[in-house]
Image (cartoon, rainbow, N blue to C red):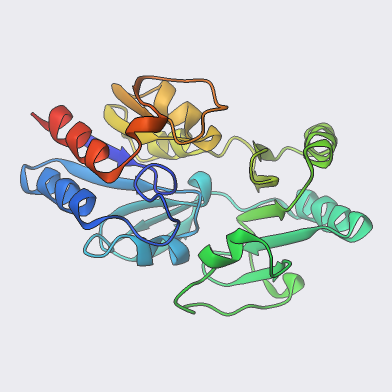
Length: 249
């Protein structure tokens, strides 16, 4: 069976590491012959430090916009030049904070107080460049929005572009990728239709809805629930390990 894992809020509860018992439980899945796939909102660059021992496996990054296999990274679909131009104009006119990712390097204009900076290239693997210098932009995050801004900008972008938009109201962020890109659509491109999925956020919704078995790690209580649930009080490394082992039996 294929086991697909989101990272932040699902396997990692501090945004910096995954507890060793969780990594050990996932490793045991591989030893039993199952395929393990990590599918994250992070680009591959920022996903690799989180998964020691699994770097050579099949990875989905940037909400489905990137794939890596045996450390060979390829884009699924970049943001079109037209849509990127509209986003760039919006960033300038609204004076928005943002992070823009290519397959490896990035551009960013983010206030030092934003928590997302802790997840941005923590091992300094890439180069920070000016936005026009990125060869292909595969994902843009609009950072630190108010709820009103997030709702307004999301509606504006939906009307004017073909972008896939994921609204994270708790963090005040909007994730933007190319049209019809998400973790589940990328699994389909890879020919993977039967899988067990673990996720916790809006960007996991399609992934969980189409899974053979889904586990919603309810680390964000405001979200509608899907699948088998680990509730707020159960969101711990121990409960995640127990669920992985139970589903593997």
